[in-house]
Length: 109
Image 1 (cartoon, helix red, strand yellow):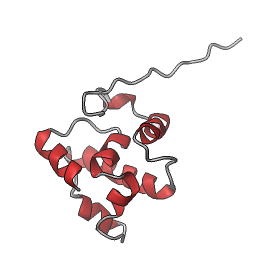
Image 2 (cartoon, helix red, strand yellow; image 1 turned 45 degrees about the vertical axis):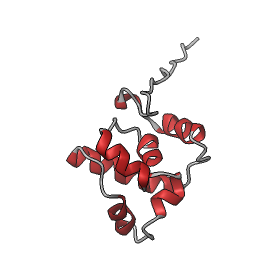
Image 3 (cartoon, rainbow, N blue to C red; image 1 turned 120 degrees about the horizontal axis):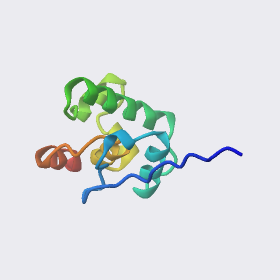
Image 4 (cartoon, rainbow, N blue to C red; image 1 turned 180 degrees about the vertical axis):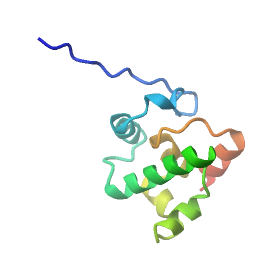
């Protein structure tokens, strides 16, 4: 009989962001999306998530969301339309708390 490895339930901060981004995986992303009312993640959602994670891994900051849209040849509200807010996209991507200024920027978009 094999032991079933349980995935630890990640902890979130007061802004709904992962406390430990290393706990992120696709299952966690899907659960965050469900919790935020986004629904099932489509390939377009995953394009955004990959872009955010790659940019953060490279530069350590949130990208300008209009640049993400432009990079994919989409209208400037693409990320917002998919995730309801750009901060939700950041949450689903499992990235750490970007700080107050960036959260305000991501929430307004």
